[in-house]
Length: 245
Image (cartoon, rainbow, N blue to C red):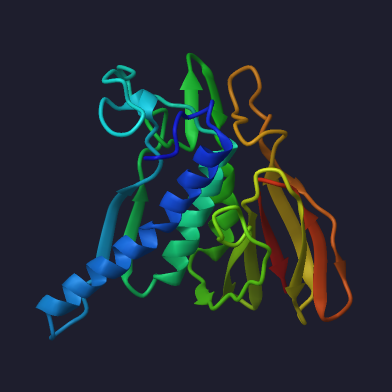
């Protein structure tokens, strides 16, 4: 990856990692074109068998690597990695008609893990929290989500979103990718908002640990609703899920 070190990254490297997560969509679309070029009788789904962030410290190859790596493939998992996870999940929602599965690598301790342990201690990573915020989308029907936003330094939207409908509810997950600026968010909503939860922390390189297992966590957030719009503030480098019923 071009995103630099897992924790001590620059502003440029912060945005490069998110750009790489977005680029997963290009890979899926190119693969779909290859699949369609060789079959005409039935639809074949794409299996994205492993995805996630792999930092230079835990691999002996690629940009930023010095040829060494940790012996157990452990690596930091920060808020930035969680934002990259949210970006990838947005891609998967948009391309859900092409994907059959997409497996995060890995689960516990290794690489981009949502769960970490040390001795008898266990804690969840920021990526776990983003997966938890996306849990309401499981089994739902993806909706087209149109976003108008100010731009990041590289020209992409600072605020992005994805949404689904299921069992009479609409779930909207919104990401503020900006490194330093908060965002005032307006969601068009005739349905009544019932819950807003936000994951963020004091720094984009914040991570949880055995000593500080809740430095990064999900908290309830306030909002207003005038019958047409839901309004709320989203901190920098944060992810939120809004439920409408």
